[in-house]
Image (cartoon, rainbow, N blue to C red; front, side, top):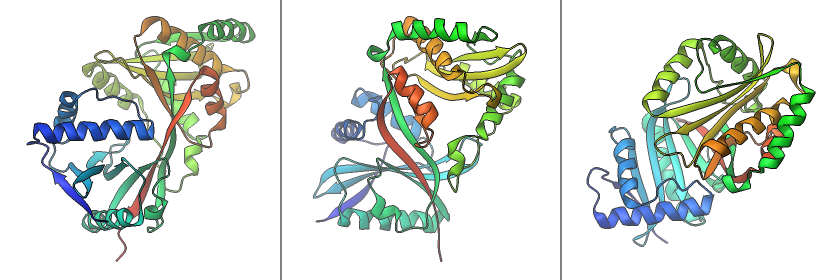
Length: 329
């Protein structure tokens, strides 16, 4: 069985190759459970134009006897703290075998030798044979869950809003569509405080995300330029921000909102604030936004928040693990 890994000239893709890549992208989205963001070959071409504008970013197609069976994307990109990192994303249309694993290892070794360290991203734990060949450290470990609009139970949300509102009558729920100067200091303080307890911290190579008022101000500006709406619900005890959650919607394409960072201060846990935040967020989203599915990522051991997501109607979609691999002389 012979495999080839061919580099694609993304600035000069024929119509036939673009159709082939779109079919392959669609097949892999179906296989892994990804959101189907790309709707046609034209959108795929636009996506490639943005991703591969930098000469550091490369696209490769895996072929077996001239039949395309996978895509490798190699990117130079900043992590969430702005540190540059080389990333190899591996997506396959079928199940890997020992011959393919050997070819992937050779390809990865060339990149590792050239750059010293790379991140290898795999899905649904399908390439343990490859990862086991390296003294890899897990950088990020996440399960993706999606919530379809049709799976939102508005009656349940209404009951929860009323019930937990009465239970937490001493607290105040506040909504904002931007983290303004009024909230920014307390927002960042709670974000960093909650980050200390994240299960992600258990991973050997995890790097904590740093948020400061200045960083958040830049995110506000960049989000506005990209047409992003930042929905945020916050729970206050007087002037103290006790809990919060966030959800981002692209005004230009609202199909797939992204929810992130549910944070509840330690002193206020056990009062149902996570569910209370979710209920408000999804009630609002259901009534105001034309969307297909919301995406959220959870560390597999973060049972408390996973249970709340499942309660709200989320369903498991796929797993994604980022492994850091370093060159060994």
